[in-house]
Amino acid sequence: MTASRCRGGGVVVADTVGGDRFTDSLRCLTAGGRMLVIGFAAGSIPEVEVNRLLLNNLDVVGVGWGACAKARPGYPRGQWTEILPRLESGALAPPIGGTYAVDDVRDALEAIDRRQALGKLVLRLRG
Image (cartoon, rainbow, N blue to C red; front, top):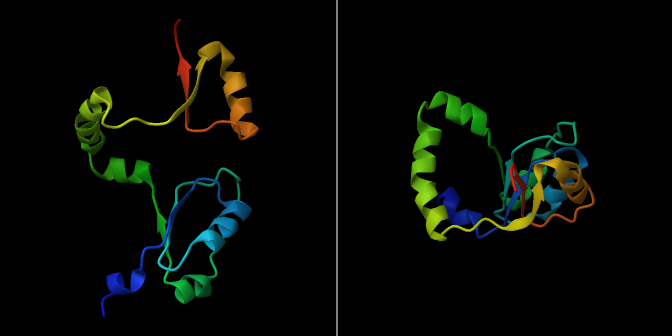
């Protein structure tokens, strides 16, 4: 039996925080789940007790966009070339949780800090 047949349909968690949140997120994964490690906003780098991974066939994957883009010159431009028409047509619609004037960046950051921001926050440079 291949590993893919054993995996099941677990959830995916994208972790940008690290620290204690990493462990909490790891506990949320169901059998066959995957954790995408994107950053460490909490400041501490968590350690993985690999028995948790083994018992539930879990994956923990590092996602380093900067390293990926640096190793593939032109790749980010190609991605935008593919994505931009979809954004312009509305086929891709990122969730916008609020729009703020750039002078109100403090309000936007406070909304994030209070966990009131749902989706992406947009800063307007003009108007």
